[in-house]
Amino acid sequence: MTPNKVTVVGGGLAGTEAAWYLANKGFQVTLFEMRPGKTSPAHTGGDLAELVCSNSLKSDNLDTGAGLLKAELKLRGSLLMDIAEKRRVPAGAALAVDRTLFAADATARISEHPDIVIKRGEVTDLPTERPAILACGPLASESISDTLMNVTKGALYFIDAISPVISAESIDMTRGWFAGRYGKGGDDYLNLPMSREQFDLFYDALVSADLINPHHFENIKAFERCMPVEVMAARGKKTLLFGPMRPVGLSDPKTGGLPYAVVQLRFENKEGAAYNIVGFQTKMTVSAQKTTLRMIPGLENAEFLRYGAVHRNSYVNAPECLNADMSLKGEPGIYLAGQITGVEGYLESMASGIITAMQTEAAVKCLPPVVFHPETAFGALQKHTQGEFGAEYTPGNFHFGMLPPLQQKTHKKSDRKTAYSERALRHYELH
Ligand SMILES: Cc1cc2nc3c(=O)[nH]c(=O)nc-3n(C[C@H](O)[C@H](O)[C@H](O)COP(=O)(O)OP(=O)(O)OC[C@H]3O[C@@H](n4cnc5c(N)ncnc54)[C@H](O)[C@@H]3O)c2cc1C
Image (cartoon, rainbow, N blue to C red; front, side, top):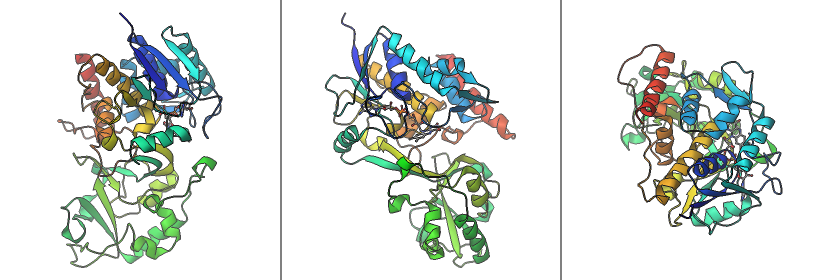
């Protein structure tokens, strides 16, 4: 029997995992990597699976989303988790690695695999040898980005403007009310009103908050839609009062009048376990986000499931241009994996590499697309790329707010989070 062949473009976190998975399933894999001949603004070397920023793969504890995601990656045979364990450096409860040895090991393991050939060079067009997985990352080269822009008819974005996501249980809902502006569009928004005094204090904190220094490669012109909230604030108080904090059409049922300012929160998922703060994409540091945003009435005890951000990040509108099996609509045999699909983070990109590899394998075997259980982190990532969370598709990390609520009540927060993980991992015991 002729072995199946597959092309993988991009030897980053997702591409490495996809190549490894498929080679171990008997595929002959050709992995294209443009580095070191051509590099990205963030990569520094020629090794595969380079961690471009932090060397941390976050907490190992099962009361964290990262802990569950790592446990699932290991159960799915992740190459990079195996290497990470071997290249661990002391970091308390977190799994941090020696990034140089991590990438060197990944390169060695992939190079030594008898069914993987690494080709160094940039791929500028959709591969003709299919199936092919594009895992070119958030800093995909210009030519392949142009190609994707054309085939997705413009559904490739270059900037990622993320509003913070807050767990529902940490919000004091009694401080606000649910309503759409002018009563339109259902009661989809939680409106948290502010008096003039509260707004003035909040405004002062916002314009003096510490910001993350922009890297040179992130110095791109922000679209109005992606304008960080503190940049809007710096243009003057009125900009916020006519922008994301405008009160018009939102009369407060407690007073019957219009509040001075309003912060609107929108469901992040159908279950209502998490909310995002509408229009509050930000470059504030994590600690500045905690102190400033907790000044909003009702958010004093906010638990952040995801912090806000604005940075360079190429990703496609996956719900619009990908099929359920991660293949590109209108381009049979072309699959996407990693951060370019709109997942966000090292672990999520690794998981996405495995998910797409499994879908490619299923398609080659004429099987239906793989459906991951929604109570697992893999299932949540799959639902994310299918547009199940949030009205607008923006890149997302995995967090427990993406999982269906637990049946049993657990009062201690860490116990509840561990219960989410234990429930997810039970699905692996069953199969
Ligand atoms: C600056 C920056 C910092 C980040 N920091 C963190 C962090 O600290 N923690 C975190 O969890 N996540 C972080 N991320 C997000 C994300 O987790 C990483 O970008 C992750 O590496 C994405 O994995 P990937 O496999 O999708 O892409 P990558 O790991 O970037 O892999 C893509 C690969 O494709 C190659 N390539 C690109 N175009 C072509 C082409 N045309 N032909 C051939 N090869 C090509 C690239 O050289 C690269 O090796 C960061 C992202 C950026 C941009």
